[in-house]
Length: 253
Image (cartoon, rainbow, N blue to C red; front, side, top):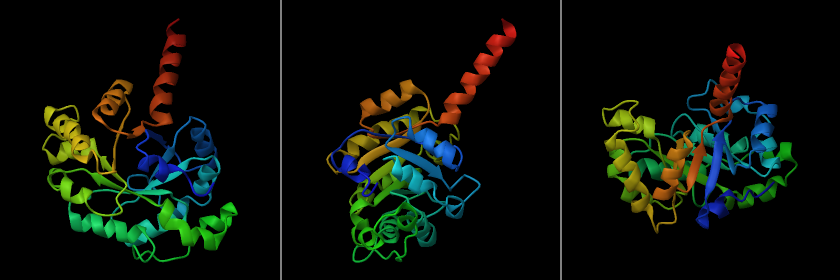
């Protein structure tokens, strides 16, 4: 369970794949872990819940050999601290646009001497891990994921990539489309040109390039472009259309 191998896989340049946890329940989490993913994305930015709702769910995910990845609502030390304390291996911080914001995110995510995160994680007690050992070695496991979601962030990409402690730069295509004045048009040439360029710019930095999509052809395309940290839709996104199709087939047969 500890340490989770996610950070090692990123350092080695391996392909890392995950999916969204559609609902913060133990049953859904355990079921999603059976898909072969490296991480489960728990979204407290847009989901109607925060870290206090998660309870033992990140520990359950860890017990399956999968990394809980929690997206916090903002670049806020309190939110980042609570996400790690409840059991996140990786924390994703949205809307990072400048070097200064990136530096703060890293500081909020790590214990001294590399950061300023307060110390008192709860998840080791739930999981039965050695509390002191987890604290002493947490910085070695911690994964920091910064979202690149605007034209400003793209313009500052090279500088952001030089911030020590950044593990993944994750392109958010929806917000990027909005920043370009093309809201929801993620397939536009402007969005796609930026998405094609980002992994080229990050090559050789040791930072993984991430994004999220549902269509398998698009995911394969992004992989061929150099994206090696990919979120693969969600079980709900794939499951509901299948059920709908089967129901329509039976009603019309």
